[in-house]
Image (tube, rainbow, N blue to C red; front, side):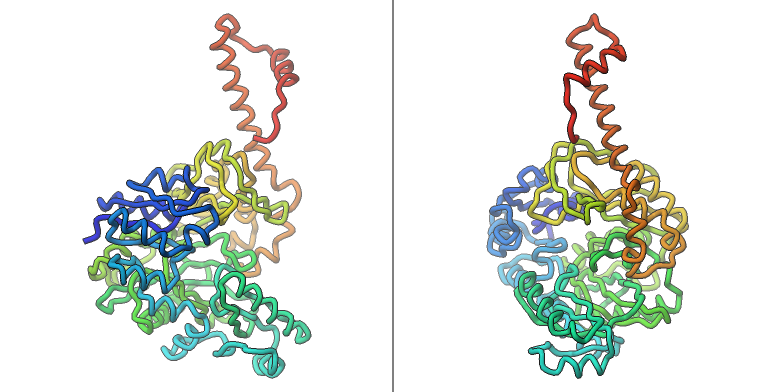
Length: 503
């Protein structure tokens, strides 16, 4: 039924979707902007169509351009990946209206769960506990003091259409309430074109735990257990793991049932994620539902053994779920680190640029989902994530040790990366012990960015410099066969004549 899929995305997620399509014998279509002409997803796909200038609002976010490429390529289905149009209800509606299979939920499910206020109301109606807060939009600044007194400080101001940590403000003092509401509304309007905000009671020392769900067109819904996502910076996830170190069998069962209820409440179809906050007493609260594939989905795939993209395609084709809840069990432990082109030791400043050298880790229990290669220039227009590094071990300690080894082997030069920062996290006692929450980065930041701990990047540069000297030696030997050896004095002279800057 589905013979050709257009992937309406870019980077690592586009490549990841296309790999599963190739395994299934499905042809793939890439779309690309001006900045992505040389991107790996364009090279990997069977066909590729140019859709506009580099800014995403002139290419990847333009529905008409995506659909035009789908028509030209005669694709039968469209996979949105994550980000861009993946949670755009109008995009899902237009795809189906114009005869394409949208590999995702209905526009109704997307719009219901995409609005955080409506999602809270839906969860409450389904009997799922939610964080105490307002169930309507804050229209003006009148009555804010009364709301705060009802729930007590601190509180969170949140964008109703929010995501990616945008449109969120923590308020600890009542005098800051009005300015926080204004700032959240302004950021929300800029990021989402919607300035609706609401207020939630702030949960101190929470864990951010999410449950993966799968649902078919016949009302069958299952969960694929949890992912721990508490290692965050500015509400953006950095490291995820499965199972959660906090989880107990009883809590897993209760939260899994709540996740399934949330999906059934909106007649969900496809792969989705229900997110929760869990407090120190193991009380859990519905946070939101992401109506798409998550960035961190590979760790679930690793411990459960299910290809989530393949499951998405089968569901979109009208097939029933291949699994029952009783079939699902976790085996071993998986950890994912997000590798970014940024400098953690300069306030995490993005550092896009030319990849001079890259060596990805390999070996037992290691998976890398990436899209860059030597000679590729990371564009400035999009998220600076380079790849996702996923490891698996039979026990959590084994997975941590394997991640340390994988990060040691991961060599990238030409741009600064978050690898040294991730190495420091893996060596932090509270992470090793599994005793951390969403304040982990904040509580350990001074240690994690301590001067001198960034030497990993320097060592990587030195290894490339040595390789470059070796390469130049071979070139010189080829040009002058008689000179078979470069003496120490020759190296010194070479260094005088050549100025090696940043590689």
